[in-house]
Image (cartoon, rainbow, N blue to C red):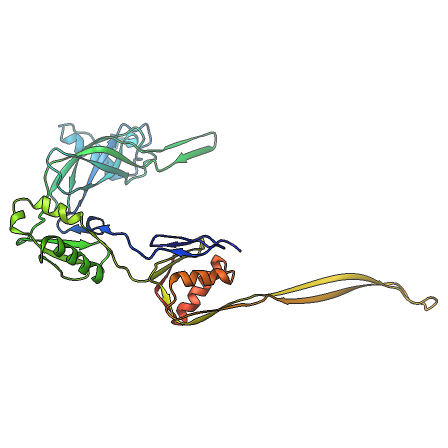
Length: 370
């Protein structure tokens, strides 16, 4: 019997041909791991710049905006050049992107990503010259500059080449200096709101009940994704301590019953809330073997006949013994897996059986194929 890979979202252990074991008790999860405070978020920054110092691997003269950028940059230093005289092989036009985390202050540094937008062959050894980074509102929040690290290489010669990772995208660790702070508002009208990572009415209600048990009746589940908390008066001047206390509280998240099937690997992932109605599952197979044998036909003596070679064909039909098992109504996921193992189901068989049970309306779970 082939081993069936079954991973449960709760604590369990399953080995093919061994008794099934499943722990139905849930371990509490910290609120900070399933929800975040509204208003605490990152912001995306973007900019345009030039990477210089490339050893002939920059943009070609066909990329006119690179040439125009070089001319404009030199004009800022009171240097006037004609576009016709420029050969930008050592320069590449790039887009610079970054994530501005919450609570960063002026003077803090953040990582940036540099990506070629022209036909540069590589950014290896290049240096990004000063580039302003803007947010969606058009305001500059950081300025980037520094040597580019591509984390790969490209080499070629004698009719062959080899490349590792991308050489037209690089990063600059701490390559941008924050010039403007983004205001972060955690409290609005004396309330703090939590946003659930996976909206669920039951989980939101449990979070509110847990907070009430610790701090009194101050929380209410506004919807499946939001829990609104009234800040107690004693924490009015110490909001960080209050939020920290909430984040450390533990709750048991609730999820819908779901079965996730990976057809490529034969992996089946089932939550412990998966149940089925009364259903019968049968497994069997039909084997047909067609063979041939060669024989020689000799004529009787003095009959005037000739020896003839003949081929005899045989057809053998074998039907494997079908295994039929009845699963009772509201069977647990353990019953399902034990039953499928009992009929000798392979991973592909399990996938087909689960799909058939779902089509029959007997599987009470969301079946997802990936």
